[in-house]
Image (tube, rainbow, N blue to C red):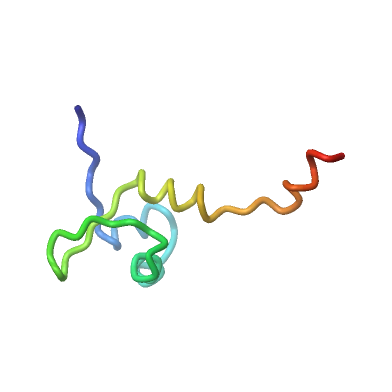
Length: 68
């Protein structure tokens, strides 16, 4: 079984195009999951980012399109 690479908020921010502060804000509000290594060290995974994107993405008009 392959383990997923842990990323710092700065590393994830460089990959996804947000600032490290925006990543930390998502972590602080509980919207973005993380692994707490210590009280000062919190790490993230790409699968956690993908789950955040899936849950946070809204498609305008998707509810009414099935009725048409």
